[in-house]
Picture 1 (cartoon, chains in turn red, blue):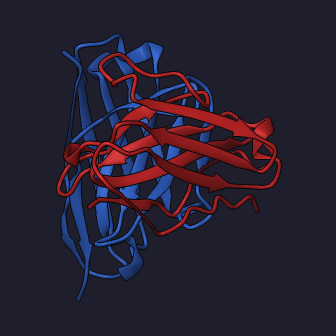
Picture 2 (cartoon, chains in turn green, yellow):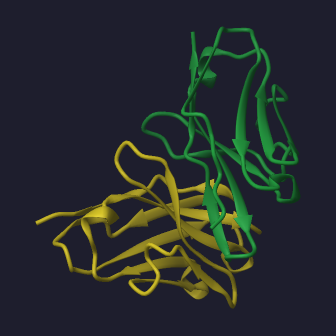
Length: 108
Length: 115
């Protein structure tokens, strides 16, 4: 079955750029979606279809997807960006929706 | 304003049953696919089930035990859960789906399976 792999944690200083990776076999052929979850809250969609932002999501959030890695990039990181981030795809070969294991972003 | 309000969670014994409900408002419910996603305590997100107008999909971990359904006249989504196990303990989220991504989430309802 298809598997999405994320690093458990990423740390970044305020004002710097954070990159969160999501690995999967030929993930570049799939549409990847990203969610932010803060403690005690429901997840929020921050990117869909690799790089599109829903209304209300800052331009600091961007994405890319190629070959075996999708990337969520957060520019000019703020303390309020500290959260867990999950990637997600639809695997048409199994008719399953899949999440990565999640990455905890720590703002130093 | 889009609202998704889950209900029906609680404590249930292993092997027992429970039905979750989700009341939707603020959008044309029948026009959207809907999904249940769960999160075990301290763990990541896990997709449970998805329903469109004519299609239902289930995660392997719940297939044969859980049934997703919807009542468009009542703007409601349901999850019938049978043969519950300790590993089904989680917060269950009702989620509006735009094709195969999730654009709006409810606040969740906690299901605890324990003797």
